[in-house]
Image (cartoon, one colour):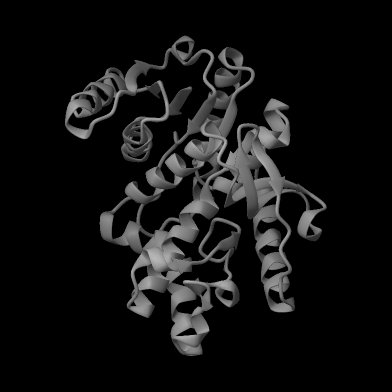
Length: 308
C-alpha cells in the first residue's frame, strides 16, 4: 500500500505521521514545491520510527511526481491555508489552480489511484477534481465531514461531561461555517439520545460551536488547524487501505441522492477498497432537509466561481 500526500506543511505532515504510526501502509511519499521541505519533513518523521514503533517508509520529494508513481491513495493538502478573518471561499482563486495541476499530475503517474481532497474550499475543490480529471465518482473523496464530525463529538463530550469514546454524532452538509449540518437529533451517548442528558439550549450551543470550530482555531493559532485534519485523513485512508467498510461523512458527487445533483457535499458513505463503496441515505427531518438545501445552495454558489 503506497500513499502520497501532496503538501508537506502542517496538515500534510500530520497526515503522513498518523498514517505511518498506524502501520498499515508500506510507503508514504511527501511531495512539496518548496526545495528540500518534503525531504526534511520525511527525514524527521523517519527518525521517530524506532521511537513510535512503525515500519512504514516515509520519503520526500521536491515536486517530482515520478516518485508518486503507482500510489494507491493520494491526498491533496496543497494550497494556501486560512488566515484569521478569511473564509474558506476566499481561497478559491489560488487553490483551484493548484488543485487542478496537482490532481492531473498525480493521475498521470497513478491512473488507478483514489484521491482524497483536503484543500479549501474543500467541497468546491472536490467538485473541481471531478470536473477536470474524469475519474469515477467512487475514487474522489472530500475529507471535510470526517473532521467536522470529530469536532462535533468533541463539543458533545464537553457538554455532557462524558468520555469522548461514549459519544457518537455526525455532521453532513458543506464544509463551511454556514453550511455544516450537525445532526443533533441523532447524536447519542452510548446509544442514548444526548437530549436525555442536556438541555435544548445547551445542544444549540454545541451546534454553533461545531460550526465555527475551524474559525475558532484559526483565530487562536493564526492559521488553519492541522492535528485533527491530519487524523481525519488518516482515518479515511485506513478505511480504504484496509477495506474496513466504515461509515464516514465525506464530500462526494451527488446524482440525485438527498434530492441534490451535480455538486459535492458531505453525506455519509461506506469506505472500502474501492473508495466510496456506497452512499448512505438517512431519513432527515424537515428541518434538516431545509438546512441541507441551504448548504447545497451555498456550495453551488461557490462552485460558480470556478473557471471550468
